[in-house]
Length: 131
Image 1 (cartoon, helix red, strand yellow):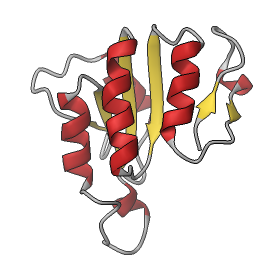
Image 2: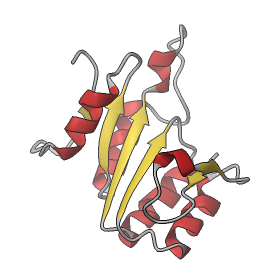
Image 3: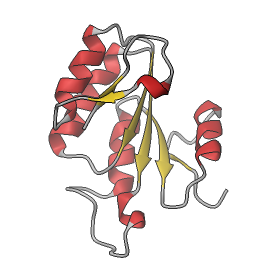
Image 4: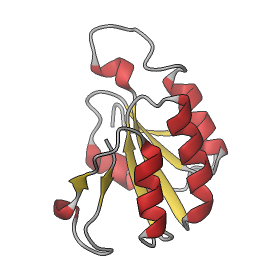
């Protein structure tokens, strides 16, 4: 599901789920609603269509931050999380201009958020693990 805010500067408490099952509809709503500023997306495993939608959307916002859950670390199984691995997905989003914060299980949200403001000179995903 995709979540959209009820108003531009309302708090996250105002976020409600959209009826859409993929990101295309939700990203279109953000674009039509004036989402040209900072966009923050909390993402799990992505389909190819979702990844393509996020790549295209990046050109419509001033800055895009993706908190990318490393879903394989959130389960007891080491099965792949989607059609590609976490690192490959993070790399594709980074290559498309997204600021990617990698969130394995037990990540500290405060550390991840601080990482969003840090300069990542290496150009890769920032991780909140072990901090």
